[in-house]
Image 1 (tube, rainbow, N blue to C red):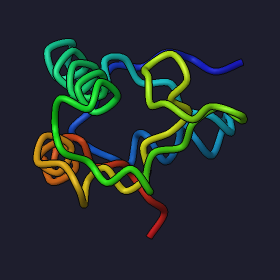
Image 2 (cartoon, rainbow, N blue to C red):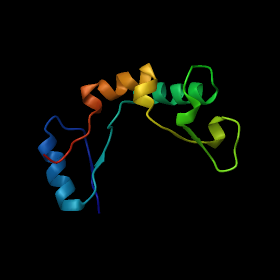
Image 3 (cartoon, helix red, strand yellow):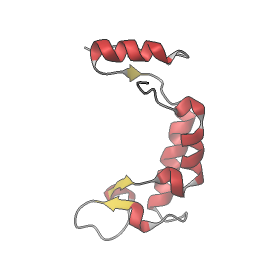
Image 4 (cartoon, rainbow, N blue to C red):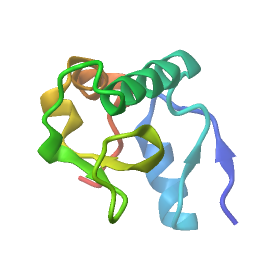
Length: 99
């Protein structure tokens, strides 16, 4: 059973917990304001109110019109959108990896 842990400054705590449990649940991993900002930007991309290359938008099978309800995935968003790029570049949003 995984245990919810608070965000830690020392990534070794994450590694030990992941090694023991096989999963890591961190709350809050991203602050609520950032989550809301990314959700807004996702909606703006789906609504086409901001420029985004359509070849990197995955829709539900059979869909031909971009809409938030049928948007399956936004690929490479950190390369094509400033809001997502800023989030990806923010050190606090980096994930731990096994060295």
